[in-house]
Length: 247
Length: 256
Image (cartoon, rainbow over the protein chains, first blue to last red):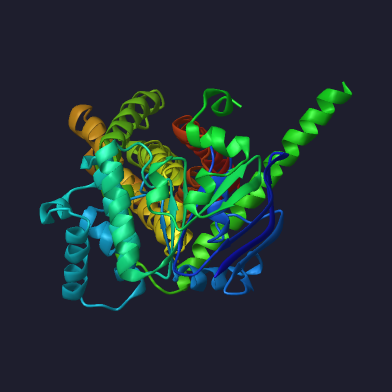
């Protein structure tokens, strides 16, 4: 469904992505792991055209989106939803306004139907109805992530991109968010790409794992294969060894 | 020496590039006014933030400016026995110069800085990217309503400033210092011509666009976290004030 071919991206002369090749199969969750600052979020942003590569291709259903015009990108983005690292909830809107935002902007649904769908999503995310009137500044980290997930899910997108969905959360909330991602994926069957460094928790939701290191994908396979991967860099990362983290 | 000239040239080119980028930013923002979806509700929201919430500060500064003009004008004119010209002196000073300039500087300090901070925070917390990924153009949703609100609000606030300033001058000149009420207003009516009022309106329109353009542009291209927001906000206030005064000179030379 999504195919990344020889993707290269540099910032201020520093090559962050150095020829990335990766396939994201339809209906599966592909997780890209790697240490902080390695370029995982940069890779993710190329998939919705938020960044343009220096060279290489990003194919979505065979079409190279790196050559898309602004209008074509707008059309493409209707198929996507993105869960940003910090949630990216709009400060000026309350929770209801945030979740309803994509529906109000991109559909002609009645206000009653929007209301029904928003509260359905809140319930799905185990959030009580009174949360709807709160503003993002009044929410805990876990609640923000769940509201952001509700907003991402509200339009039932074909493809969801998760940027560090559990960073900064405590272990119970990490498990809750991963459980919700897993549950929504089973229910909707969407295609997903997730970037994360939360090892080993992330293995529980992934169908395929790829490891990004020094601008390249150095390992790729099923979670069990990655955990047994012979590359010492992969093993070092999975075990969280200090010398690698300080590399 | 060569290094100095090289650095100077580089700096000049950077300024020209940024001016060009700002002009394109403005054109895109204004062009999106005519592209659906139209966003009247967003424009009204921004009018409240930029216009209505600046009213109190404009009332206060307008009143005190008029009072100072009344006081200074009275004692200066008295030397020449021309106290009766106080009304025209206050009105012309306010309508031609002080009203548009001081209103613009106050709006820049209050609303311009707030707009930069708001958009800058939206940038660093990925809210602008979130709009993009929802196929909502952030230029149209965030920037365009603020530009339009600036164009509408600043001339109206300037008119309020002028009226309150004239009343402030009346309070000091007529009520406290004994200038004839009839002389105050008739002098004003005789000396203020449509060109003065039109000049003031044109200035306030240009200042309104300038303030919101600088504020939106600096916020939109904020980088480097909270420090970047702080720097962008600072730049907005300084650059707006300089541009307001520079535009004031250029426009005044046209309307003289």
